[in-house]
Image 1 (cartoon, rainbow, N blue to C red):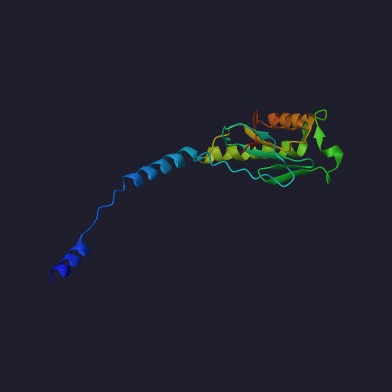
Image 2: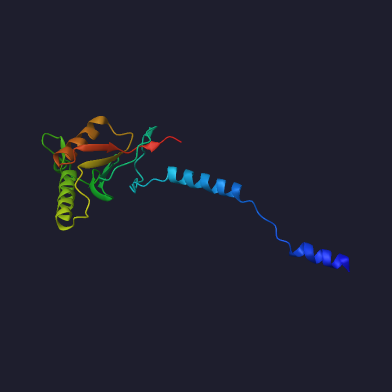
Length: 167
């Protein structure tokens, strides 16, 4: 009978779990996740025809208008504004061949929309004049220079080039 009471006594005892090491692991994971969290919220869709250059830069993108440029197309905030394969060559450039007309017109519209939303809502994003340029790495500098000139003429005078991070 003493054996039965001994078995019952062993089953009813509780044991303590030391969770200090588990808390250490959770703290380390929390610190890691907070450190690697990107709170900028800038999401950029890269079209199929654009291959981004590689970079070691670790700075985050800023809010601004996204201008995507491939060999034959230009998009402003994911809306196609120019397709050189379909466009008439005489209607693309003005100002001595330095300004891209469809891009300029769309950027002026975007700027006006941002200014109107500033007036209507105090919580609206202010016009920053930032242009995030997403440029195919095979484009010539002379063409990129025309894009930059067009952006500056429309009021977007600060440029941020979007690149692919080396991994």
